[in-house]
Length: 281
Image 1 (cartoon, helix red, strand yellow):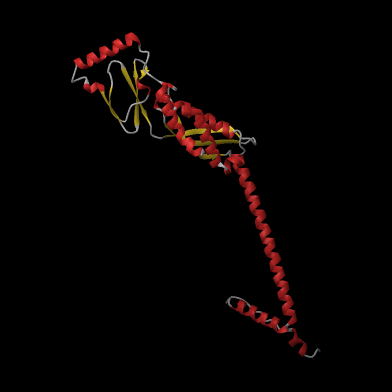
Image 2: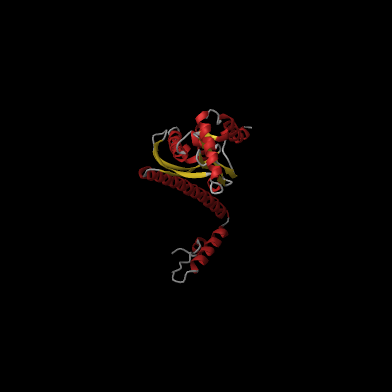
C-alpha cells in the first residue's frame, strides 16, 4: 500500500499544481498588451507564424509565462502549441531521468572512523511548474541536497553498518531526498553507494587482523589434523601388536616404497624372531 501511495504522489501533486496557478489578475494594462500582441501577430502574417508556433518533444514540457503569470496554471506539451511572441516566455523542462555522482564525502562515523563515501543519485521532474517557480536551478539544488543528506546519514552509522548494509542505507537516503525535494517537483527514484574508501592505516590494521584470524584458524586445523593422525596411528599400532605378521607386512610395504627410488641405499630390517633363532656365543 505504501508503494502505491508513493507512486501516486507525483501524479496528485501535478494535478494540484494545475489548479493552484491561474492567469487571472492581469489588469487592464495587461489585457491591452495582449490585444496589441494579437494585432501585431495578425498584421505580420504569415511571417509571425514561425514565431508563434512551438514544438515540444515527448519527454519535454513547456511552462509558459504570459506577462509574468503561468498560462492555464499548467505546462504545455508534448506536441504543437501557439504563443504570443511579444508577451509570452517559454521555459522548457526535461522530464527524463537524470543521474549525477555525489562527490566523495569525508565524514566521521558513529564509531569515530574517518571514511570517504561517494554515491550516485537518479531523479526526474514530475511537476514542471513547481520545478520552475520553486527553485532557480534544479540540478544545483538537488546536488547540494544529496551531499548534505549523505553526510547526515553516514554520521549516524557505524563502519560495520556502512560496509554490510548499503542497500538499506540507500533506501533510507532515497526516502529522505524525496521528502525534501517533492515540494520542488522533483522525484528521487534511486540512490546507489558507489565506493567506500578507508584510510591507509585502517586498511593495514584490518588486513593484519584478518591475517591473524586466518593464521589462528590454520593452526587450529593443523592441530586437529595431528590429533586425528595420532589417534589413527595409535589404533594401527594396537592392531599390529595383536598380529606379528602384520608388522612384517608393513616392513615389506615400506621396503617396496623405498625401492621405488633408484639412488638410495636399502637397509633390509631383520625380524627379531630370526635373530633369536641363532645360538648366542
